[in-house]
Image (cartoon, rainbow, N blue to C red):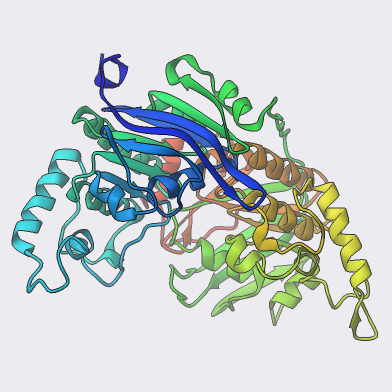
Amino acid sequence: MDDAQRPEAEIVLRLSGITKRFGPLVANDAISLTLRRGEVVALLGENGAGKTTLMNILFGHYTADEGGIEAFGAPLRPGDPNAALAAGIGMVHQHFTLADQMTVLENIVLGTRPLWSFNLGKAAARKRIRKLAADYGLEVEPDRMITELSVGERQRVEILKALYREARILILDEPTAVLTPMETQALFATLKKLVAAGLSVIFISHKLGEVQSVSDRVVVLRGGKLAGERTTSEATRRELAELMVGGQLPVNEIGPPSPGAILFELRGVSTRSTGGAALRQVSIGLRGGEITGLAGISGNGQAALAALIAGTVEASQGDIIVHGETIAHWSPRAALDKGLGRIPEDRHATGMIGDMSVAENVISEAYRSPRFSRFGFLDWKAAASFAADIIKAYDVKCPSPEARVRLLSGGNMQKLILGRALDGGPDIILASQPTRGLDVGAVAYVHARLIEARDRGAAVLLISEDLDEIQTLSDRIVVIHRGHLSRPSARGELSVMELGELLAGHGHDEGAHHVA
């Protein structure tokens, strides 16, 4: 029996009656939880449940209106991030906070020495980093540049940063979102070593299977309140999901596909690099009535492929063929005119404009059509009516079509994008990371809509870094690595570990390109 399971294990963190209001909105409502030495507590909840607000209060970014926090038996000064760090609390964010043009060592020691210090004490720091890395299975070369590291290696650097600062409590926010299965297994092995050494962990995740495999207890938030707490070994996945959504979780059944003609095709297409990996002699065909899943680790060319299909990046060679017609000048306007429905990867940066209204956003790709424009003037009544229809049909939690989009949760923004993309029944759908950061309820909703589109005959390209999602929805799966595509595999043909091997570049035939 480990420390986390012993009643006498020390309570290292105690949140008592934490309440936080933003005007009339109660983001956290009298939330209390504890964390013991050597324990992993998973924090679950839908988007907007209050998890981020609670963590921001813990780290001093927000000040609670009511309640208090104790770390290692001492009150934690509110509204002071330095107090949290000094108390031994570290956090690894989902989106890493590393300086790309600096070395691993420089990133780790940054902020640990005074600005007026003449040197960084690199020799001593290098020795200590290497010992921490060896002790906890976080191998990474201190003098390598961050730009040279894989995603998994960057995460190791983030964990080493916290350990270097002698963190005794570690908060992991969606830690496996961008990792391969092998990297995830390595992370879990590291966590076991850290917990065995007495570190306490709060593990924030949407992946219930991971929560069950790594945590000792699960705390569920819903609507800003504590919805329940369970011992992990005694809780089922469905029970946890239903605690999150407050009722029974819908089950999406996906039957066998009825593939039709190829509606969209790339033949020998390459692109120039625009930050991530460029495409290299890529050929792929998307059939109606079928979901093609594209799996890949971030930065391996899926962003370039999505941008090419959406028309925002030009091909340097190769052909784009839509409905059997080779398109000479492919652009965002041509893509929309040819019936492409686009769900972009980043709903904040490229999906929606936060300071514009819901109505303005949902007509942004069709404002020139006669439906919303007459004699050169926008028909705002028609726009508001269309927005109201989407709000109702997609169950968007939104006060009105005039509301600013930035006030909506991520899940509700995604529902608006879905409504815009699927309006009119497009026969080609580009769904890029459609459920990233969404809770189980919102994920089930998005999946249901994509299945509906496939069943009515649309060709769907699902681009996702979530292998569970790829395996659940895809009729065929293709893996991208350094701009090359693997041969396609049918649903269930490859195991998670076999797909993981392809994600890491093993078994890829980079000299060939294939029509999927």
